[in-house]
Amino acid sequence: MSDPAVPRLNASRFVAVTVLERVIDKGAYASLALDAELSRARLNPRDAALATEIVYGTLRVLPALDAVIAAHVTQDPARMDGFARAALRSAAYQLAHLGRLPTHAIVDETVSIVRGKRGPRLGGFVNAVARKLAAQRAAAPEPARALIVPDWFRKLLETSLGAARAGQFLEQRALPPPLCLRTEAGAAARAALRERIQAAMPDAEVADCLVSPLGISMRRAGAPRALAGYAEGEFSVQEEGSQLVGLALGVQAGDRVADVCAGHGGKSTLFARLTGEPGRVLAIDRDERKLERIAPELQRLKLPTKRVDTMALDLTVGAGGLGADFDRVLVDAPCTGLGTVHRRPELLLRLSEQDPTRLAQLQLGILQRASGLVRVGGVVAYAVCSPSTAEGAGVAEAFEREAPAFERIREPLAGAFVAPDADGIVRIGPWLVPEGTVACPDAYQIALWKRVR
Image (cartoon, rainbow, N blue to C red; front, side, top):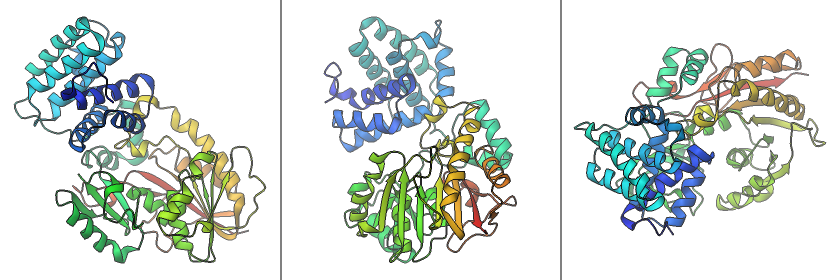
């Protein structure tokens, strides 16, 4: 249940403020904190949607909101009570970008929340600042159009991608990003599934993804588990860029595939379908709890569970006795995740400009050990959900200097759908779709090699 000190009419905003404090001040992940608070509050879908919009919207433009608030307070904002500051950030976002919400409701409910949680003194402080923010509210507030990012991240994007691609990454995508589904029956069945979902949810925006032949892009569709086709195993939830990473490996029928750093197995299930019988997939991850979710997902997708084996293994330590027995190996390496900041804006609160270089060393070590699992003639792919040069091309070049048995693949493999750039790196992002298109992939980088001896 929601906090008893807060009236029910404030529930959406109370959830949002609670989550924002946990994410910004205590380092929580937004998706996990929001799921937990929504479960406690038991909000109806409309109220849950508002809480979600406030949380992610606030995080996406946080630097701009903090600048506006700082102009109306005399104390150091960093010393402000965390809950009160989260409430002001939430109110500032609503006033600036949610024109459908009345000013008096935003201010009165924000003040009520803080007064109920922190008492009259902080309630009065928030009331004074919120009314100053409200006095400056635009006559017609507009939705946030782009991420507001720190200078170091903008510079990283421009250095890694060039000015044009960096601009597309920051500004071309509509916020929030769409939910993406991966159709399980193949490209031919995509239209039928899309039409079924649209018929069941006429207010949702449902369209084919423009790059992945398996992808469906959706907005205002609600929880994936409630969609037509979920219980029947007709789709998986997977972002379009992640779908393209899986397809880039070019898995063929009968292949033996190792999915390194498999996590919950989103790509493992794709490989299980592509390889069929008598192919096999080995999902490797250091976290055994993540691997335990793969078998139930295979059952939902009507795939034989025996087609995917799992192995809890830390490849920074060793290869666990595995030999060069695999036709295809994907190293979906742990990375900064900066290519996903439209979905996970809190990443910019906990990362710095040193992190891409730091994580690149970890990625190189995993890639070097994982490459030993590939047979002669087989393929290894290294992928990161980051646009940084340190994590993409830098790791690829370092690997090649010490791995003469591997030759870079510079042409797309069968079924890959995305070609490499001139330097041999496959770069996935909004630049793959026509200018102005809003249903764009997150940013990924992929390098592929063939083992020649």
